[in-house]
Image 1 (tube, rainbow, N blue to C red):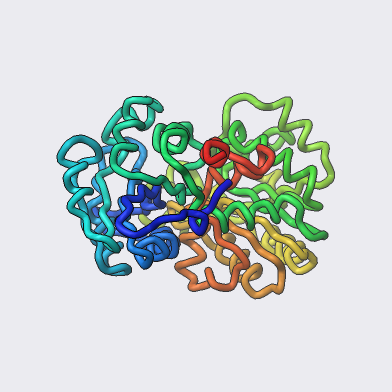
Image 2: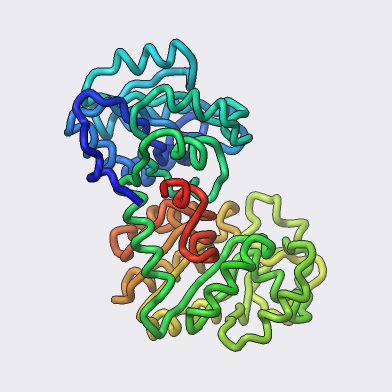
Amino acid sequence: MRFVRDIGLFENIPILVRATLNVPTEHCVIADEYRLRRTIPTIRYLTQRGARVVLISHLGQKGTETLAPVADALRKLLPGVSFFPETIGASTRAAVRDLMPGKVLVLENLRRNRGEVMNDVTFAHELAALGDVFVEDSFDTCHRTHASIVRLPKILPSYAGILLEEEVAALTRARTPTHPALAIIGGAKFSTKEPVLRALIATYDRVFVGGALASDFLKGAGHVVGKSLVGSGGSAQIKELLSNPKLVLPIDILVVPESALASADARSHARVALVEEVRSDEIILDVGPATTVLLGELIRRAKSILWNGPLGNYENGFADATNMVARAVASSSTDSTIGGGDTVASIEKLGLLSQFSFVSTGGGAMLEFLAHGGTLPGIEALG
């Protein structure tokens, strides 16, 4: 794999950069600039050498959102940024030709063209017509087999950006941690987490499962989980993992009656219960205080920590355990690697990001990198 520093010519060269611009927005306002800040080193490296930088990215899952407010936010962090409301075509090529050396042009959301997600070769060639060189710097999408990720690098001379290089180096180290090593995996969907859980159990000393994912395991262990979110299938695989002594589950949890979840004061209806005390009408929304004490002790003993996914229903305000664990990890001297949008957002709200050894911009990409031998389709496409 070649890196941006290996590019021979920069001056007045149009360079396409697959950037990490998929940031959380609320009513067309950027809610979190962390990923934007991480894109800047590669962009600045190129512009300072006289390149004409063309940023391509996506925003949201459906492709209906515009990158215009993202370009506005990026302009406040890095002067010389402009936005063009199309992605391919003659007018886009003209806009790129008019771009001055050292300036940056953000193109419209890639996913507005169905050729992106469909991995269409024609769409990839249309993108390639916009630049002489391609730089992949969007680690968070490298697990996708989309046109800009796996086809475009095969058409243009291609390089890894600074952010991608950092991600690969840090997560490669995380695959062979210093022991004792602790992994904390939250979120939901056992079907998508099974490969990484197996990989982590093979290399880490303890693997704690929280979030909605814990409900799958508690149910598999024979406990009542009430109305909690659980996946379909995978019972045999869950039982197999439950037999591994490295797996750690919550010992107590925070539950709320389903009827109270939609109320404005849902938290006032919450109670702490042992895992065997959940009622049939209740929903598990967070891990309990005894579990956070247990995690605190595991954190204190660990020399390496990997964390991806919140421990509770973060979206609905059940973030106490997540915040407590974040503070415990941040205050330790442990080599810590974290990722996942909600995890990073919660830690940034606490002002603790700088106290972690490495913060990944990838959620699903981070997990798939760890699960699949330290590579991803977008990385393999770079050669």
